[in-house]
Image 1 (tube, rainbow, N blue to C red):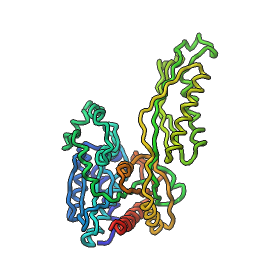
Image 2 (tube, rainbow, N blue to C red; image 1 turned 30 degrees about the vertical axis):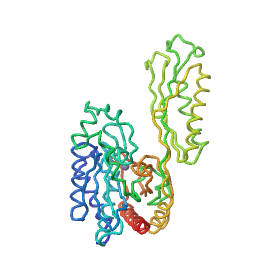
Image 3 (cartoon, rainbow, N blue to C red; image 1 turned 90 degrees about the horizontal axis):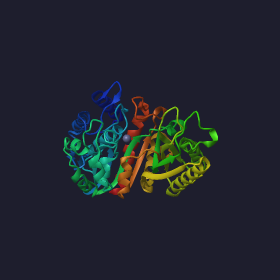
Amino acid sequence: MALDPSRTVAELEELRELTGDPQGAQRVAWTETWEKARDFLRSKAEGLGAEEEVDEAGNQWFTLAGDSERALLLGGHMDSVPNGGWLDGCLNVLAGLEVMRRIASEGKPRVTVRLVSWADEEGARFGRSLFGSSAAAGSMRDQEELRALTDRDGVALPQALAEHGVELDKALEARSQLEHAAAYLELHIEQGPVLESLDLPLGVVLGTFGVERSRFTWRGQAAHAGSTPMDKRRDALAGAAKLALYIREIAAQVGGGAVCTSGGVVTRPGIVTSVVETAEQLLDQRHLDADSLARMLAMARDAADRFAAEENIEVEWERIWSIEPILFDDTLIGFADEAVREVAGTSHRLPSGPLHDAAEVARAGIPTVMLFVQSLRGLSHTSLEDTKRKHLEQSVEALDKLASKTLAWLA
Ligand SMILES: [Zn+2]
């Protein structure tokens, strides 16, 4: 059976029909609609000769046994955010399925080929992303915190998981799934504007950004808005405001794709008649290079101390979360470059701002690479998410070529 990229597009449309509504995709992990998407995948994989298995973390696997146990993995995620797009996550799963059909039709492969739909990549319901892939990679270390998470309706995470056959305490047993993994390939929509601005359909991902997430708590003095002269104020918001603008400087100075976002400031007392006493400010900083990322954080902290002194207020810093940059495999990046060139004529290498399951797999020491396909207007996590049909088909072709090159390398 020859590769048929248009079938992937048709299946994506079918999935959209089945699991979306006018507001967008509704395949939130650990819900009925997500199960519907998993059933859909199961039905599409029928007749492939691949064995299905759902592991201890809820990841859904389809294994096409080869001459060797060493395995090439193709993966993505069927779950979406609420009111999400029709391509995020499921493009990689359905494109991977099409590639598997092509491989299966050519007889028993030299190495085993496995398709995985990772459970709860988005973390949309409980706020914890990359659930299934971090369990399989063995990097999940937050079981205690996971146990305490609840959704908006007060349902605890362990209970929601149990309803879908997953015991939180056993999730890490999914590690055995990566035992024979020799390479991991993931195709994803870019979810950003870079490829569109370069007028290129496809790109090769170098790795995922390291992330530093901080909370700066600024403390001044609440004071009456009418009776306190401007030069007598200790305004906590002034420090947060200065930092919110200074992070542009940090990103520009460090360069190399650096991004900084002050995504939230909560002020107290938060009334129109008072100077702000405390301002809690969130900062997210990302870079592909670990030293650059460390420098970005140091610059933000130094600046915060300086602004606190200038404003006669205090500031405390706290790390909320961090992850180191994860670099993909050089050999696979080379194959991906060739595959993209063969399909689209030109290739472009770029980092990934968002985290992906591929980062977890790479962290587990498995050679990994990702392909990006252009996103129209750079939009994702919205029903407006879209990619040109031609580009979708090219992306399936590129994944297929990349899979062939990788299989030849592994055999
Ligand atoms: Zn995704």
